[in-house]
Image (cartoon, one colour):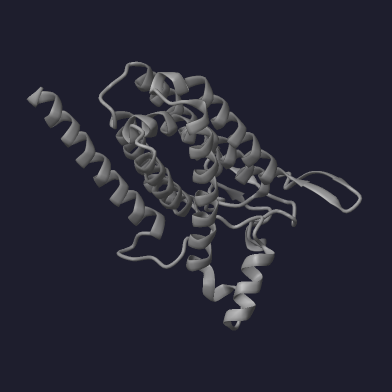
Length: 261
């Protein structure tokens, strides 16, 4: 695809970085437009977004390093140096989600904010921003799919892309676009659900259930290194299964509360 949008001298504008930045902007725009409906002040929301994003980036990088640590070099110093030199790429979404969520709920508790209602607002924004990020993955060639003979396929020919050299020139599942489209659909569903003002936590549970199911299925079509498999499943699939179960438990508790009321 187009891993570099343009180059001016030594300056390069990477497609992945550009799309991630656009995703953050789209998510922040949505959050500030809807802040009043969640009962949040914009100054509180600004701090939530800033520290959550920092925590998410750190978590995404740490999960990536933990997953592929042995491939970074022969010893600790070489591996740590490689991780620092390549900080601009190599992130694991679930790592960012877990660390970012921990920071988010900690700040909500510290500032006495309605955490579940704030999370209901953040869920559609997250899905929207993630859709942009996956388009960036497609342009860069990372997170690519397995070889396929089906009509829906994409062929990467640029050696500068993140696709394995073994797969250059080979039709692959466009798993990045599958997930981008799925995230956009999830965004619209969550946006409608948030507007209906369900019990706090319902939109968050809907996001966790929908995204984890989507990610679990798309993982079967991924062709990049997925980390060590356990029980025939990738680490992302195991986390997806746990997230889906967590969403089901939260739905059950919300349903039980509605029935008691």
